Image 1 (cartoon, chains in turn purple, orange):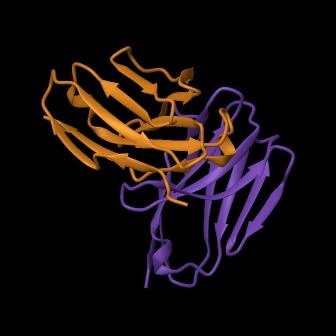
Image 2 (cartoon, chains in turn orange, blue):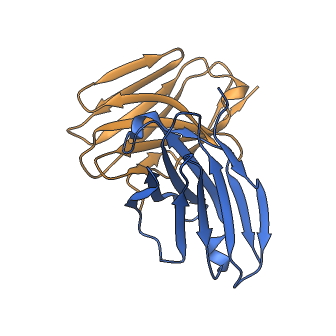
Image 3 (tube, helix red, strand yellow):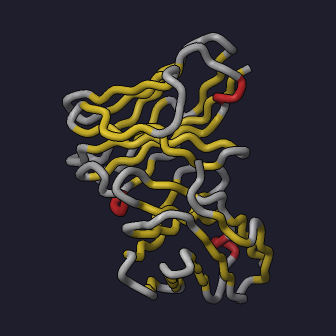
Length: 109
Length: 114
């Protein structure tokens, strides 16, 4: 079963705008990760945030984690057409890694 | 360093048949995990192999099985295929088991069951 729920399910923006995706999860976690997937291909790891961290940056990506609300957000700044993809959050605990349903991001040139 | 490779990339089978998918991890990685991705259920964890032993298993029927060889390459097998088994099967490798934060994914095998 899936652990997380991404919100929104789909997002369409113009190039240069910022994109924000949210993820909520249900159980305790060791870490939360964000992945990108292009057109049903393999997953590309974007960023990991551990349960004792609140915010992390990587290039144009900013991830926040609120363990009290069991939620995370991924912000992509100054989006590009190449950012068009599906984005998934994944939570890891001692037993497995569970993925959310994903947000489909479309960046229009 | 070469990435995770999966073969074949595409496969078409008919109901009732069985199928074997292969995954070669990154050199030096000893853990291989398998995931099924479908439009309806999303990405779901199948199982993880480490040192030729299944360490974790998701909630899938016994028709789904796997194994790992001494060189860490892994295969997964699905017997008595059903239409609902049509999916993208992804494998991921990592250095050790349960290191969910250091997984590298392959491109996937697209299985279509007709």
